[in-house]
Image (cartoon, rainbow, N blue to C red; front, side, top):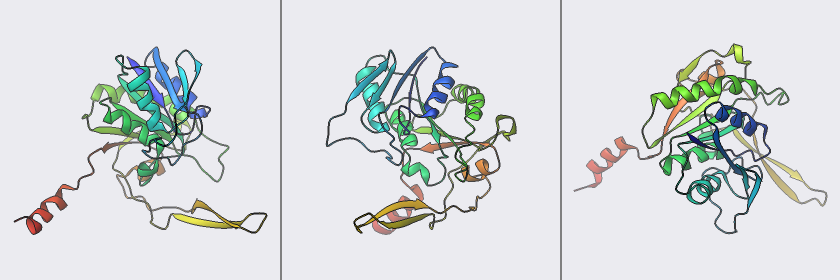
Length: 254
């Protein structure tokens, strides 16, 4: 089984090394095509206004000057054309990708693009305590990742669905099982803008996040990760809301 792996933290990210270990436990045909630099928050964006550069690091490891979406397209439509991968894995992201994160995440986008290209795809992320980011439990996805991916492959899922996996911020032996979850919703007051002045007195701004506890309804990805469980969320590519379609059709269609 040929596996393509990518991420949004960049080619030098420790989570990519973890994902390589997970993939190598599943196959001896693993290809890495990841962004040259960090692309966190890039979402499902494409590089359209400048050329992409491809740098070969070793036999099956490449860096692309572009987004995670670019990387998957470059791999499937150019590098591996005619010998496409059977599975795309994206991650392991440093930080959870839960709730509204799925619309911003380059990690999720890598799996979205794989799904759009007709390849079963899984995004994997690891929750981190940002009050102490030096303590990251990389060994948790390292120990649980391959077994979980293997079970997901055996179970299968529809062509227009990708799988979003989030590992909790706990030691491997403290994981409270696996929960099949739905996408949660963050407090809309989660973001903040921090304004500062540079050395010349000119204002500039950082997008930031409020560090506080959040309400996590049971059954959501937020709840599972907060409870110490591995969250597995199937995400659907079709964003159409069918109930609203039917209601508007009744109101607006003759």
